[in-house]
Length: 116
Image 1 (cartoon, rainbow, N blue to C red):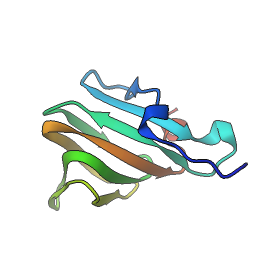
Image 2: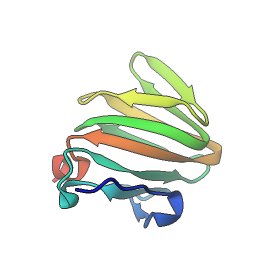
Image 3: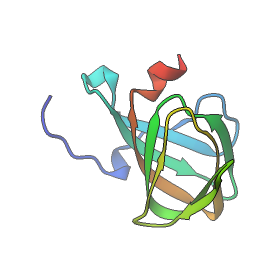
Image 4: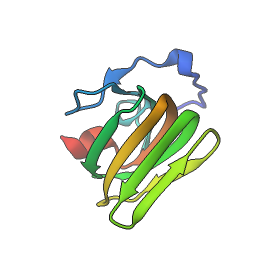
């Protein structure tokens, strides 16, 4: 695999699996490319909510807007330039705020394989 660079304009967003809200993901690198991690971009419309038990370790870097992640232990909120780590097995509720959000994410292992 060669060194590669990606921009949000390279992303082809698809609705997040099992969701009917305005929450989209775009894998830029994943198992199809021979990588051991998945790297991509996420896009959340205003005031969206996504609830799930994580099948992978997930790291999100907020690029635009704000996101809050709630667990039984409490809530963290992140804005541009901040990182949220969500460990495998954690039950989370991810909420975007009134301006929505754009993120970059890294998961290990591949989230598509873990959900399949």
